[in-house]
Amino acid sequence: MHDLSSDIATLIHALLNEDHKIHQSAVESLIAIGSPAVPLLIEALKDPNYQVRNGAVWALRKIGDMRAVEPLIEALTDESAAQRGFAAEALVMLGDERAATPMIALLRDANWITASLVSDYLIEMGGIAVPSLIVAMNDPQCQARSNVAGILGRIGDTQAVPTLIAALNDQAALIRRAAVWALGELRDARAVEHLLAVLRKKNEDLRPKAAEALGKIGDACAVAPLMAALRDRDDDLRIMAAEALGRIGDVRAIVPLTKALKDRRRMVREKAAEALEALRAIQGM
Image 1 (cartoon, one colour):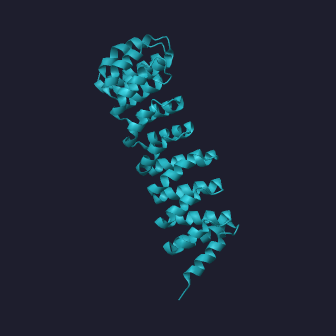
Image 2 (cartoon, rainbow, N blue to C red):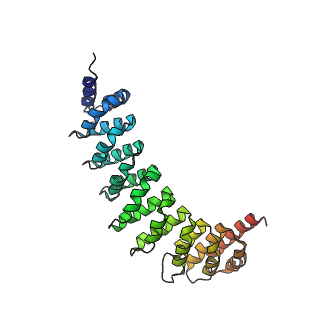
Image 3 (cartoon, rainbow, N blue to C red):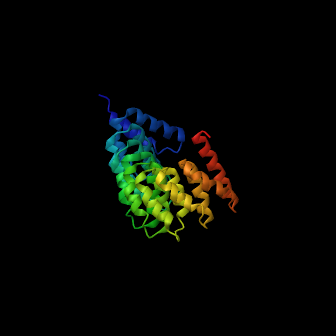
């Protein structure tokens, strides 16, 4: 009987070869073998040689055997930043929710490229990552919470709405900003009254961002406060209020937007004109 395990061991040894063609050929052969190669490939994840570890990750990624999930999670702590990133990508391909929390920890990775890649991978994981991301909104590190809020906004799962609403009261402006943006992306009406509360805070720098988010959500409850914002002293707020009113498309905004055509700021005038054009298109005027 042919000893397949001997062939697998030989191919794993070939991963040491610095010739890219030989290395790649060994990886492809291991992938072709499939599940029988998984146990030895898992062992190879701990090999002292980077090329062996790298080849093992790529093979496991393509084979797609769920036995590799826990070993790949361990590989997220590899000394090589590139290998940590490759392990994260392989875990995304496997699509197991167990990977979410360990991958979230990599958002704090010292290598910014790895952290950025992991952010994209978590977004690719989608809904299965959301429960772990919601828990991660309690991370003590401000930048980590901000990153997580941004990822939740890009995933677009409304499970995150209550957590992001709570983040509007975070002590760190960075977190409040990320939460406002994310709520706008989620477009959930539950956020409207809370974003209106931000809009009404006179000393809140996030008022323009809140106006933008309200425009994305498109709830008619925001129309009157946004019309009032067209008269605010804050130039950026007037700009975003005009844009938001154009998005919402409520005819009540026609008169204040027409008055905004005479605003002292050119950008406000331009946004008001664009909003009025959008309103006319909606109303068939």
